[in-house]
Image (tube, rainbow, N blue to C red; front, side, top):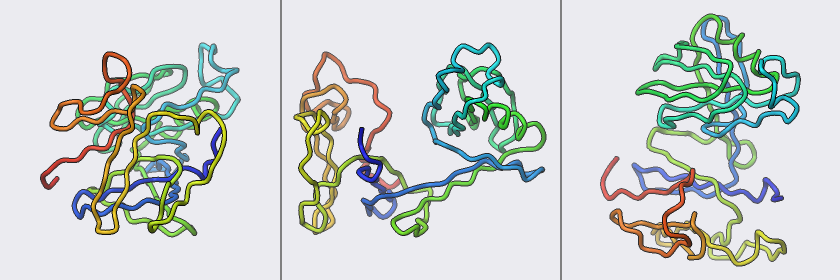
Length: 235
C-alpha cells in the first residue's frame, strides 16, 4: 500500500508548454439543471468499485452498501461493464437511456455516468427529470484553486525524485521500491521538458514517430490507461 500523499500530479499546458508538478486534489459533482439535485463524483474515466456483497444481485438498486459514481467522457469510447447502473447522456447532458447494468459504446458527443452500490438509486433519481451539468474543481496545496483550461492535460505519478535541483525522494523498503521499469517526467532549470523510460516491463513504453524505441518485456506493447504524448505542432 502507498500513502496518497506520495502521489504527485503532472499538469502540462499544451498551449504554453509549461508544466506543473504538485500534490493536487479535486472535487466533482453532477447536477440536475431542472431540480438542482446533486450527486458527488468519486472518479472520472475510471472503473467504479462494486461492493463485494452486491456483486451477484440481479437488481443492483437493491444494494445497501456504498459504491461509486463515475463520469465518463466521450473520448473513453467503451465504458467498463459489470454490476451497477449506467445513464448515457447526449452532448447537452440530457438522458438518452438508462440501464441496470454497466457497459456501453459511447458514440460521438455521448458521455455517461455509472453508479454502483446504493448510489445506483441516487443516480436513477437525479436523472429522472431534466438534464445534467458537470462541475469539476482542481486544488493545489493549501486548497488553492487551480484554473483548468481546454489546453491542459494531466497524469498522476508517484514519488517526486527532485525539486529545485535537490533530491526529495526518501529511501524505503518493499516490492514497489525494488528494481522495476519506470517512466520519468521532469523539467530542467532552463525549462526543457524531459521524458525518460527505464526498460524492463511491458507497461513502460516509449515510441517516437510511431516506432518503438525502448525494449519492453514481452513480444508486444501492453495496453495501459495513461500516456504522455508530445506533438510537434500547436493543438
